[in-house]
Amino acid sequence: DTGVSQDPRHKITKRGQNVTFRCDPISEHNRLYWYRQTLGQGPEFLTYFQNEAQLEKSRLLSDRFSAERPKGSFSTLEIQRTEQGDSAMYLCASSFSGANSPLHFGNGTRLTVT
Amino acid sequence: DAKTTQPTSMDCAEGRAANLPCNHSTISGNEYVYWYRQIHSQGPQYIIHGLKNNETNEMASLIITEDRKSSTLILPHATLRDTAVYYCIVSEAGGTSYGKLTFGQGTILTVHP
Image (cartoon, one colour):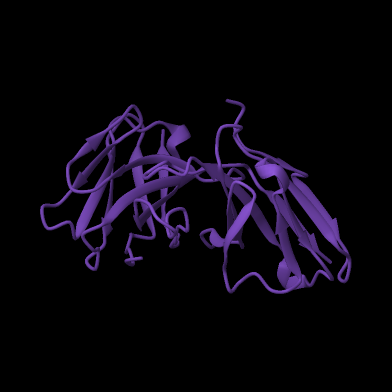
């Protein structure tokens, strides 16, 4: 169990650019979640996958955001035309789909939009 | 999911027990109490969860009141490495809503030497 891995750890981009983050979940886990965390706040749910199917998206996930999980393994989160308000920590988590399976979080990608 | 209320911050001396309270007065019958913590610059870490019985694992104990309206997370012998933000979350155990955790602002626990 190598844990949930996220890449990159930090990303600085200029407003209007597109960025893509990657998450590698724990290999046996079939659920994968994306959360966003701004400074001083708790994480907020964005979306989740069960295997390759994206089952739910939060209202926080605007049309500029898209997430994929091809083949039910790693996932990517893309933000198009970044805005300064997108600056945040983007956290990925994974779990089994069974009841009460705890979420295992990665250490996040910190995005700064200048 | 039911809302939780936690103190903004708490202090604890190293080696002593840290008792972190959480109020969840609107918890429903099928909702569990989960505790996660977040150490600076890391992702949240699962600690423990429970429905109505007290629970203990290698990290902590969880005491849930009989009416389930509040709970206490106990770190029996706090160390400096336990300094973190502690989140109390109420959520269903399964189904489509599981994993969509609602984090509040948590309790900042500072363990002093």
